[in-house]
Amino acid sequence: MIRWDAISWRFLRVWRRNFVTFRRIWKVNFLTPLLEPVFFIAAFGLGFAGLLGEVRYGGAAFSYPAFLAPALIAAAVMNNAFFETTYASFVRMYYQKTFDGMLATPLSLEEIMLAEIVWSASKAAAAAAIMLGVLSLFGLLLWPGALLVIPLAFLGGIAFGAIGLFFTGIVPTIEMFNLPIFLFVTPMFLFSGTFFPVSNLPLWAKPLALSFPLYHLVELCRLVCLGRSETVAFLSLGYLAVFAVFFTILALFFMRRRLIR
Amino acid sequence: MSLQAPILEVDGLRKVFRGRTAVDGVSFRVAAGECFGLLGPNGAGKTTTIRMLYGFSPPTAGTVRLFGMDLGRDWRRIRARIGVCQQDNTLDPDLSVEENLLVFAGYFAIGRREAAARAAELLEFFALTPRARSRVMDLSGGMIRRLILARALVNRPDLLILDEPTTGLDPQSRHQVWDRLEKLKASGLSAILTTHYMEEAARLCDRLVIVDRGRILVEGRPGELIRKHVGRQVVEIGGPDGALREYLKEQGLPHDDLGERILLYTAGDDGRVAAVREHFCLRRCTFRDATLEDVFLRLTGRELRE
Ligand SMILES: Nc1ncnc2c1ncn2[C@@H]1O[C@H](COP(=O)(O)OP(=O)(O)OP(=O)(O)O)[C@@H](O)[C@H]1O
Ligand SMILES: [Mg+2]
Image (cartoon, rainbow over all chains, first blue to last red):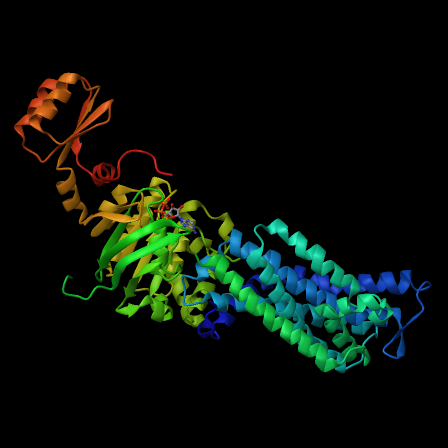
């Protein structure tokens, strides 16, 4: 049902539409990635300083803030992309009828949906870049390797944006997003090696963490920011890529089924 | 006009939603420069038809050809040449008035400088220039409609598709929209229009169809349809009595009996109508010209839809 031949570079025009609206409130949009890492590092670095010693990870010891910093970026990538293609896309689709308007122009549904996903990834990458800057001020990251976080954020953004748009294609009402957030986003945020190494988990819980795309993004971010990782980089990259492609296809399929009647 | 190839050819168009037929075999042609009307009660299938015309909904059966191209295959080239004014407000509330036009022009791959020039021109044409930087949400209903129209023209279309362009507007705004549409028509733009205002259809449309339950009931020029299905004049007789009813039946005069009122249709000089006016119009009686609304109500009935 997906019309692959209907995808062209025109999708960048839809991307631009989202960029124009983003630019209007850029100060607000930049505030979260600017302040969030400061709050987390302050809370865990200062508040927990006495409780948490060093974290052993990937065969080396790290201060807790250093261990946490790359994961904060990865989690922000997830949140930015996922919330963009769920709540924000749903509002555009259902309340603002933005896509209906676009479908009266030479744009195809596939281009519009692809643009939504790519936009969510761009927004996630922008947030990651800002966080990178802030966290570098704390001296927590390795330069220039940490710059690779930005392309990683884009890839992760595609993965989380795609699964978000897939949910937008199937939820009956906007309130129903609570479900994927409770069952998917929150557990992932807590158990993807974000706050503690997955190697600390009991054996039975490890495969679960391994299936989380956030886990692989966290690992890849740590690799480029700290120089250590507990996964094989190519496998993690491959997993994210396959996840991204799979859910992009599902998102296109279900959005077409939902919108074209 | 009739010598030219039609710019829109619709053949046997059908749309079935989960077993419910919304459009049931509609065929018509629209010539270049023509304004074609699609009238019908609520739920008649107008919007469903329109959506199939610009390739939003895939038809269950039938074909749509625009500018000699097949919509299924050449949808992108066709959409580049049409302007659509949807029934719902699909303006972008996240953008300003001007940005709405600029961003929309982008969807047609119109360059920035050209888009800016067209936006300025269209804002001027629709008297929106002072509100260029306003948020869409701050506009009145009339301004919103005008902006939707402006947006539909940003790609300089060869065919304008209008789904109820004046619904919900006050008389001032409606006349303003009509005025603009007439100017566009005079410049040679073809249009297809749905409306619930018969006055609008009679004023703007060269030709129209009345649809009901997904089927076309009649097709023709507004004036012709009025003469054929109603006549020239209508006599509305309030509080009719048995004697009048008897007389009408006896004489075989075309009329509609609404209980409290009888509408008597006449082609003009008719001695029998004069007799009715003389003998039965003692109480409330109105004489007026026949309108498209009479045609519409005669053909689609008077009971409520949906
Ligand atoms: N997506 C849909 N799914 C199911 N039924 C639909 C859908 N869209 C329209 N219909 C039905 O098809 C019929 C025709 O609807 P349509 O919107 O085309 O009517 P309309 O002539 O535009 O009416 P109105 O004057 O109220 O705008 C209606 O019975 C409507 O309920
Ligand atoms: Mg309609």
